[in-house]
Amino acid sequence: MNPSTEINFEKFFQKLDSKLDQLWTKILSSSPLAKTVLSGEVTKELYGIYMLETYHYTSHNARNQALVGIRNDIESLPYIKFCLEHAAEEVGHERMALHDIRSIGFEGLDGALPRPLMETEALIAYLYWISFTGNPLQRLGYSYWAESCYKYINPLIQSIQKTLQLEPSQLTFFIAHSDIDADHFEHVKTIIQRSCKSEADLDAIEYVLTTSLKLTARMLDAVYEEYQEVQLGRGRRYDFLCKKA
Image (cartoon, rainbow, N blue to C red):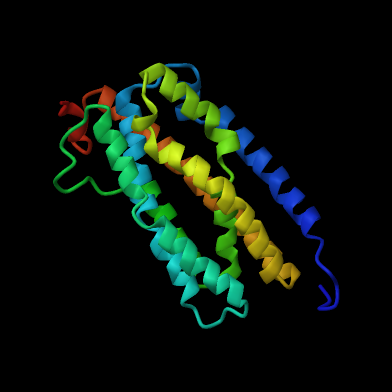
């Protein structure tokens, strides 16, 4: 792109939204976890395993976001401010996931937690990798879909709440984030408009959006596979699921 060429951000956002529609449609139509939830067959055990993996990767989001903000190759001062402020706002959000697990009757979370699944660790590692290497703007690709995912996952959340008969106080992670993220999403779009100067910036954002969402989908598949192991009485990773209040 010629430096003097003006970026059409409206067209770029439409492109990202179209890609998200395609990716989420594929995930929700092929994921065994999503199918189980939407069919009204979700159990507390499946919900508990998913929320534990959510805790694991969410506990790193503030850290890898802040890591972007301390890089010395960022030209956009608004982006530095965005990274550090957004990281501060994310601190501690993972504890809501543990609260929600405990709230449905599971104990045994006070000691050492089982390590993340391999697929969860891959997602965590990837987000750190793209936070300190490559185009510093690329992490906005993860932020773009993570802050706008509720339009796609709300049917899953509603089905979980209905099937398990949960109160809003037992879904604090999702309910709190749905309100917070609506405002964050608009902020992400504003920062993209203020910070991106080239086609390379846009390509980097789109690449990370696609890759990080695909890695998340693999984590969902791994959660369901672990749930099947629990149902068959195999493995000790999730002993806490057997320790109910």
